[in-house]
Image (cartoon, rainbow, N blue to C red):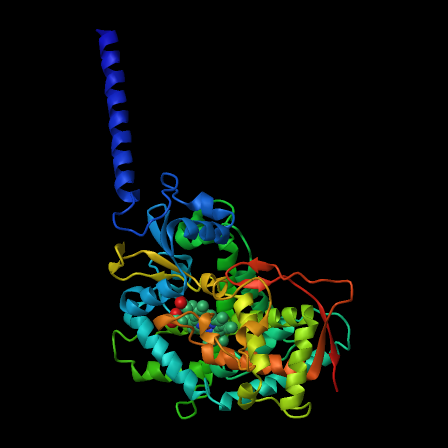
Length: 499
Ligand code: HEM
C-alpha cells in the first residue's frame, strides 16, 4: 500500500512535471514562433533567436544574410521581430511609400528607456509630430538653414582655428577642439550661449557623450532589444555605464533650463529653451499639453547630443582622410586658392564654385558613414510589402551602409576616391546616391545645419592649414570604431599654418 502510494506520488509528480514542460513549451512556441508572412530570415536558436550569431560582428552577419535572403529579411531576437532593410530601392519603397506606418520608434528599446517616449529622437505619434515641428520652426527662427547662421559658424571657426594655431606645429588629437567648436554652435541656438575651449564642465559632458557614442561593446545591440538586461549582474552590454553618463548629461542640461527659468522674459525670447518656456505658458491651461518640463529636458538632450557628436565625428573623418591622402588635400587647396584665395573668408556662396571640394566632402560622408543603421524605426500597424507582412511592433533597421557601400553604385567602395562624385566636366554629381541623413519623415532634423558646418569647417581648415600626419613614419588607421556611431580611432595630426 505504502509502495503503491509512493508510486502514485511519483507518477503524479512526473505527470505534473511533464504537463508543466508541455505548457511551457507550448507557451514559448506561441510566443517565440515565427509569424507567418514575415520577410524570410534564419530560424535561430530556440528562445534566443539570432542573438548569438549576430553578436560578435553584426554588420558582417547582416551582409551574409542579405546575400542569402535578399534586401529585406527578418531576424528574431527572443520574441521580437527585427526587420533589416537594405539597398536604395527597398528602403525608399518601404520608408517613403509606407511612411505613416513606419515612422514611429520601437516601443521597447534602450532609446525608449532613456527618453521615456519623450523628446524628438525617441518619441512617436502625435507627440513626436508636434515636438518635431515645434523644434524645426523654432530652430529656423534662430537661423537654421539660413544664411544668418553662417556668420555664427564662421565666428566659431575663427576661435577654433586659433586653438589649432596654438599647437604650433606640435602633434595633437583634434577631437576635443572639434567637439567644443561644433557643440558651441548648437549651444548658441538652444541655450543662447557658447563655452570657452578650456571650459572644464563642457569638456566633461562632451566626453560622456563621446563615450556613449563610441563604446564598441559587441553586445550593445542586445540592450536595444532587451532593455531589461540592465537588471542582470555586471554590465556586459555597457548599458549601465551609458545610463549613468546620460543622467550626468541631463544634470548639465537641467542647470541650463534653471538659468533660463530664473531669467525668463516673455518679451525677449533668446533661444530654443525660452521659446519652449513661452509655449509652456501659452498652453498652461491645456491638460494634455506636450510642453512639459520633462519634454523640454528630453528635446534638449536630443538636440545637444545629436547636434554635437555627429558633425564632430564627420569632421574627424574628414581630417583623417585628408591627412592620409595628401594629394587630395593639395587638389582641394589649389581649388580653394583659385576660387576664394587665401584672404577671403569662405561662405556657402562659394560651394557651387568648389566642385572638387564638394566631391571630397561627399566622399568623407559616404566612407565615414557615421550612422550605418540610422536610428531604429518602429511599425505602427501591419504593412503589406511585396508578398510579406511587416508586422505591427516590429523594429526596422535601415542599413544605410548597404547604400553608401554598394559596389554597383560605388565601385571599389572601400577606397577614398572623391572622383566618383565628379562627371567628365568636373561638376559634382550624385550626392543623392547615398543617404547619410536617412530619409522619410524621420530624416535628420539637423541636416541643413550639419551640411553648412561641414562645408565651412573643412574649407576653412584646408584654406588655412596644411594638415599633416603626426610624423612621417606614422600611418593612422582608417578602420572604424563601431559604437552607436561609426567613428575614427583616436589619431594625432600636425597643423602647419599657411599664412
Ligand atoms: C553629419 C551630421 C549628421 C548626421 C550624419 C546625422 C544623421 C542622422 C540620422 C541617420 C538620423 C536618423 C534618421 C532616422 O531615424 O531614420 C538622425 C536623426 C536626427 N538628427 Fe541627425 N545627423 C547629423 C547631424 C545632426 C545635427 C547637427 C542635429 C542638430 C539639431 C541633428 C539632429 C537630429 C535629430 C533631432 C534627429 C531625430 C529626428 C527624428 O527622430 O524625427 N543631427 N540624424
